[in-house]
Structures are given as structure tokens and as C-alpha cells.
Length: 183
Ligand SMILES: Cc1cc2nc3c(=O)[nH]c(=O)nc-3n(C[C@H](O)[C@H](O)[C@H](O)COP(=O)(O)O)c2cc1C
Image (cartoon, rainbow, N blue to C red; front, side):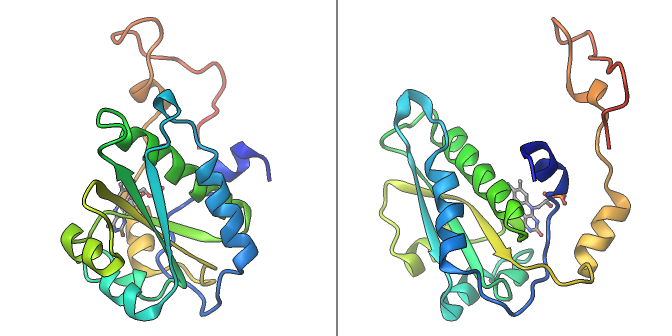
């Protein structure tokens, strides 16, 4: 799978098989995060791989995070507010997407989760004060059948056209693709 294929294949998956993510696969995913670029090479991130079921239950308390209890692995992405106050959100997000694409390449399904109570997550995972919990990533082998939430979202959601999200030379000149590269 090349990078563009992985980007195309990535979709939020919210239902997982009862099958653990092998340690070697987890290591490759974390490695993809570790190799992300960062402003002034500050690397203002930290990733916590959570497999423990009791902990995952705590992470799944958010209204839109129930499936975090079912996912065999949740990666919690933290940003260091102290080392890079201006860029930690950008840098840690780049690392997060790197990890998601690496997971897709391994045949795994993922979903970003922003539905959580930060204080609860910090307490459960013993996160130091200077780190912000930015996002969680659920990871696991997808169930054959798509879960209901993802099915419904796919019915109502659509992707914006390139010309709606990109411009040429200045904001007011929409980028017009020569051939239809959109999906
Ligand atoms: C920062 C962020 C937070 C998200 N939080 C949640 C969430 O709490 N629960 C959920 O089910 N999906 C969550 N999503 C997934 C989005 O709903 C999903 O990416 C979007 O609907 C597009 O669908 P796709 O990922 O299948 O392309 C989140 C995505 C991002 C980027």
C-alpha cells in the first residue's frame, strides 16, 4: 500500500474484532508518530498506548467514545505545552495522523476521539501537568460489518470538492482540478 492508497483507505472505524494488536505492529505505529516533523524539532508529544481494559473503560466514558472500550488498543496523544507553546497542537496532530496511516497500512481500523474529560484521562493515566490531552486514537481490526454510527455518518457526510477547500495563488481563486482526482 503506498501513501496515497493508505490516505484513501482510511475511514473512521468504530467497531472492532476481539483480537489484540501485536506488539511489533504497535511498535511500528508508535515509530510512525516518533518520526513526525515538529517546529524547531521540539517533538512536543507523548503517546500512551493503552491496552488495559479497566483503563479503556475510563477512556470510553465520553458520549461519542463508547467504542474505546471495545477497541483492543487506544493511543492517547499528548502535547507538551511547555516545550512548544505555539506549535504543540500542530506537531502532535501530525504525529497522530502519521500513526493512523501506519495503522491503516497494517490492515487496522482507527478512529480519532475527542469526546473525553481531560481531567479524568489525565488522572487515570498519570499525565504530568504540562501536557495537554489532545486526542485519542482507537485502534483494532475492523469488524466485517460497518458499525451503525459509521454507516449513518457515511450516508449523511460528503467530502468537499477540491475547489471548495483549495485555491490557486489567492483565496478568492478556487483551485480547479484538470481531471477528476476526487473520490
Ligand atoms: C479531532 C477529531 C476528533 C474526533 N472525535 C470523535 C469522537 O469523539 N467520536 C467519534 O465517533 N468520532 C470522532 N471523530 C471522527 C470524525 O467523526 C470523522 O473523522 C469524520 O466524521 C470523517 O469521517 P472519516 O474519518 O470516516 O473520514 C473525530 C475526528 C477528529 C479529527
